[in-house]
Image (cartoon, rainbow, N blue to C red; front, top):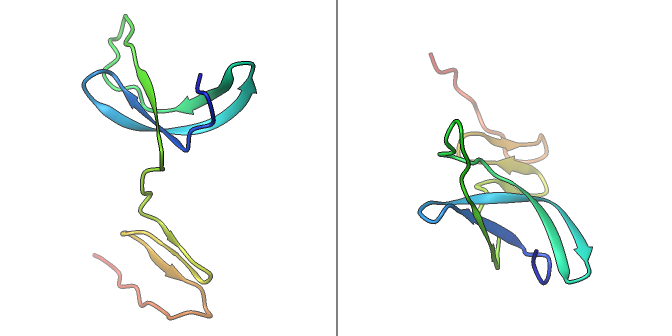
Length: 92
């Protein structure tokens, strides 16, 4: 539970940190209950592992740029017909 809805959360197992996605936040009597989604690496096949949540002030960069006439990342630059055109080459 957090005192207010965090902008983002980091999940840690005490050694390694990973980003988590906030998928739901509900106000409760003492603050905000947050449901997060993350990949739990290193959990034993028959056992358990403890993870810790920490709120952070800003979200991690996604690597996706969005504008009025484009959406792109490092793999796929894409612009609509009203913007500059890119030529794509077939990779063989």
